Length: 563
Image 1: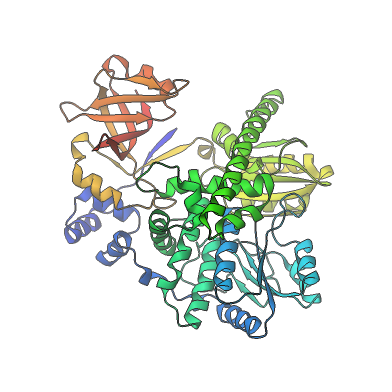
Image 2: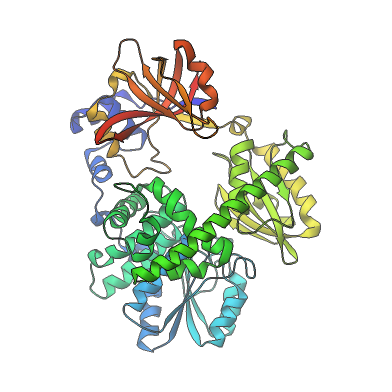
């Protein structure tokens, strides 16, 4: 691990903010590091309000989208809500379709089959719309680069409204409306919305048109928060507001489908992290193992008994997904070692037998192990399909763009992408991708980095600091849980390994004569020798609250240690 201490912000800014907010300079430093330098910015950060949401009509083409939907309703047209099979897509489809159905009956949903149709808008989906007399398709979390598909639909007198958040290509599709805050000609104030977030802005605009208020839309925010967490978008601006209030809905009045997924979780309140690791994988498992329709059925079901039945089936899919994930990851590691590719700048592996629904997870696992841009391919029909994952600060989308001559199609983000290519182009692509990455990646990026917010002493940790840090939630990209460094710690003799394979580390530490703190280090069991016999060590950690038998105490959650 590379330990990188963030630069200290200008002291005059820190002191001014600390004075204005009546907080310690440590807390003011953490805020300034996050771009919060004024009282009003701090108010919005600590007290997000639904009033902080932007007017949806600031988004380019929103007026056209609303007008076309209202026209479809007035003329009793059939509306098809189309979305991708991942969490962002299925939550977006569930959100927009359930809102429309609360006002108008002629609405249906369509999720493409991951294996038969692949990612995004499909010709099969458009043919389904034509065969069933749908004249308007609302596409969510996809479509921004589907120029040929939209042209195909236009020839069949089927209109499209696109709600996407991916980067546009050189040309926009000729749809009735293209809602995407990443459009260069769109001046919407916040461009980090996920696909479900763009869908929410659409129903917010429709609601305004019907004289509804934001309070009427609160029931949809559990879906938006789930998508924000799963799609790993920045927890800033509007996303922070939507995530905070969406978490409140999840914890107080979730829809039956989400309630059924979390009813066995024994926690007082779920966090964004819980959504990422408990709710999102189960919703994703439907599209990975069976079909994304199963996730939409769960998320739009209003009867709890039926939702529990759906959730039980999805739990089985998630169990199957875990087994496949474990097996494919094992085979991929073996392939890398056999081909002696450990020293390359990239990881690119392929097997025709790997399950297409799991290769994205396997790519993430391999990235964690080898820490370099990674692509996992499998056979999909007569093509090779793949998922790519990247390391921090390296744009894998740009790298794919440089290899585009070898690809049939590709799309995605800086850190995650998908692609297809012809079998005969696989080796040429693999070589080209290795060449591009080796020539453009900074060597430092091939070692995992931990950013440190501040160096502190254990004596700096008190109840007020713990309480203030809890108000930094929800955590996520661009607002990560603060990481601290403390030097010259000593275990007081309680150090031990925990877990089935001794993979975790438990300590009780002091610094000089400070108050002692309990410490847990997940996955750091192999560092026990560093702390034995009261050997001094330096630690990176986050500050958590640990509840045991009704007592709540501060606990340090280790990220790394060095002698």
